[in-house]
Image 1 (spheres, rainbow, N blue to C red):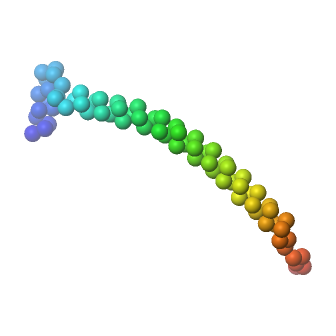
Image 2: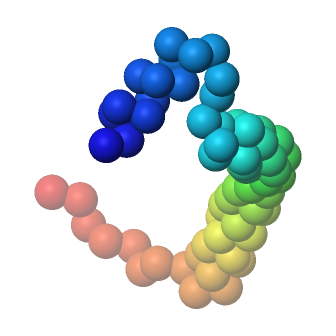
Image 3: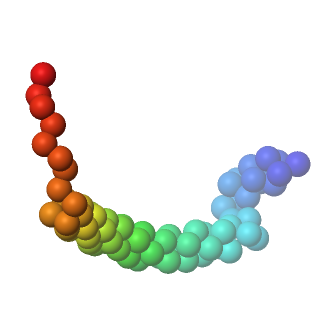
Length: 74
């Protein structure tokens, strides 16, 4: 039934009732998702770099505080 109304709207040149609503909804979703994605990606890279730096610093402090004993090599 929907296919028939879609074909009729194409023939008559008039869009469906929900066409404008759907188009506006997609535009709003697209406009709100782009800045959210940019913020999310940038905070991921900034956060992961800070976490990596902190883990390396902590690891270095642990190595200097508790040095590994000398082990003989094979």
